[in-house]
Structure formats: C-alpha cells, structure tokens
Amino acid sequence: MPERETIWIIGASDGIGAALAQAWAGRGARLILSARSQQRLEDLAASLGSDHLVVPLDVSDRDSLERAAERIAAIGPLDRVVHLAALYDPGKIATLDAETAAQIVAVNLMGSFHVAQVAPPLLRAGGQLALCGSVAGYIGLPQGQIYSATKAGVINLAQSLRAELAGRIDVRLISPGFVDTRLTQRNAFTMPAMVTPQTAARAILKGLHQRRFEVHFPRRLTYVLKLLGVLPYWAALPLTRRLSR
Image 1 (cartoon, one colour):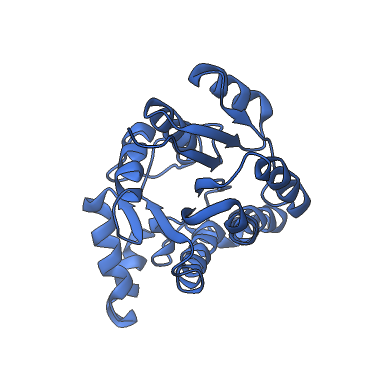
Image 2 (tube, rainbow, N blue to C red; image 1 turned 90 degrees about the horizontal axis):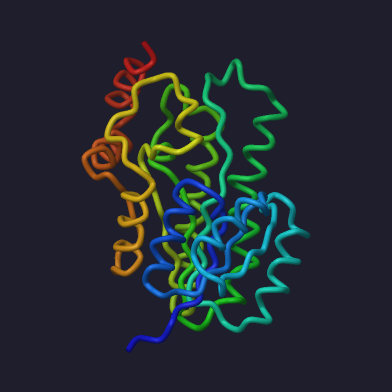
C-alpha cells in the first residue's frame, strides 16, 4: 500500500482549492489547509475528517506565511505544496482602482514569490511545488488587466524555479481556463469552455501525477490561447483587438 501523502494546499477555502482538498482527502492524503478565512477552512476540514490541519495565513504578508511555515515544519517533510490563492477584479486597465491593482499584485505575484522561497525547505527531497498561473497569462487579452499580468509573472516565476530547483524539487505550473468559482462569477462576458471546480480538481490531480511541467485545462481552450500566444504580434494583436468589441 502506498505511503500516505502530506499535502499543503494554499487557497483551500473554496473553489478549486476546496475541490482539490476533497479529492485528495478521498485518496487518503493528510492535508494542511491554508487561506485567509479560518472559518471556511475549519468547515472544510470538519467535512473531510478529523486529522487535517487548518493553518490560516495571508500570502501577501511574508510574516504570516513564515509563521505558518514554522507550524508546518514541526509536522515533518511535506510531499506536495500547491499554491492557488489569488485575487481578481474584472474590468479594463483604465478603470481599475490603483489600490486594488496593488493588492492583486501583492497576492498573485508577490504571494507566489513568497511561497517559492518559503515552501521548498518544507518539502522532502523530490517533493512537489505547484504554482497556479492561468491561461490569462499566455497573452494580454481585453479585460485581463492586472490579473493577467500577474499570472504571466507567475508563469515566468515557475519556469525559473523549475530550472533553479531541478534535481531537488519537482516544480509544476497549473494553468486553469475558466472555472466556475466566486471569482469568475464576477465576469460580465461569456466564458468559453467553463468547467466546474470538481472537473478542475480531477485535471490537476491527474496532471500532477504525470511528468509534464504544466497542467493546463480544458485543452479545447488552452491550445487555442497557446497558439495565439506564439503568433507574431502582427497576427495576434488584430485577433485580440476583435475580442474587445
């Protein structure tokens, strides 16, 4: 029988993170659940069983993350760390509040940077660290605004980290398309190829157990955006301009 995994999920309070926690708990994993909302985490942990640990934190606050890491270090080496926490505010760049934009950068990009520094020492040799980008980071799209820019940064960060930690830590990138969560429910536009958090969780579990660096889904959307991202600007920009109409 395979040894039980210990997995730290950051951003576990709802959406993809909660669905992923449910899926991994169903496979017998011991979970450490983190997010800003302690009550949501406790409710989730209670629904999963009694031996999962709730560790509230704010990834944009380095001290908060380091205090959480000190608690987790006492448990022993982790098998996986999956970082999913993010902020999102739809709209055009010209209308986005500057303070909100700074918060999105602090959580999405700087939060991933903090996790990239704090998490590796907690992992066993060959353990896995997964950062969450987005297909929105493949290319600048209308209403992608600062969220897309931060996710492009996370993609780049994961690529650099993969090279720097090669042979020691298995770094992965998760790039979801549109997932039906409280974040995407704020969008006023039609979202193609929408999937449920449960479908997203199944795709992530499958992908993280395979050898590919990036877990991206649903592929009927991601391959289109990947193609758009590799086209020369003279071909790609007229296509993205059409999407703003």
